[in-house]
Image 1 (cartoon, rainbow, N blue to C red):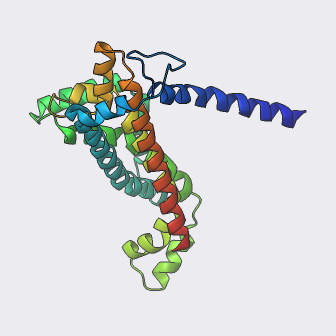
Image 2: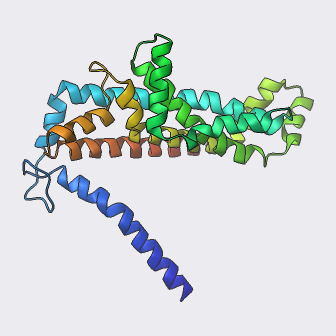
Length: 258
């Protein structure tokens, strides 16, 4: 009876989560000039319109650049920070961890406004780099938490053995610790990429007319038009996220093979 209840719960949870996504995908192929369900027909004209629009093409490319850039920056920042917290006992370690995780407690609207004020006070231009920095700050907590959860369970003796065999600290980290936490890094990176794709408030504050992102373009489109173009862009965005998951999985398997 318990197994049946769990299976039923999982089934209804899966339906609850996937049906809205499937509806968006189906709407993106609708022939009608407005959003409706079920679709009255099937067409690719909304995807063709996106491909023909320089604004949408630029927004998609910009979102990919921001997603990859912010993910790399978050990983480069978060992995050493997690290693420092896990391996070093120093005053202020808990304060540093709290500081690194603090972006999780700040609403995105407030965070976007704060970044905008800081960027303006520093007289820095609002461009893709500003969004990359902002998204990386939001993504660092995910990298730190996933890596820290693995690092605290890795015995220091593993690294000590490498040091005993002649490896310096950097080489011991690269050859021993890094392969052991690669899945945690990939998990954190995927979270960062996902957050970058779905975050709307921060790009709203930091983008300009020359640097649109998908989030801002979708938001603007929904304010002025109700055709299925938004559904088509959302489907493309979903495909990009699934591609990132697939690449992460392949990289992890390649790491296991090597």
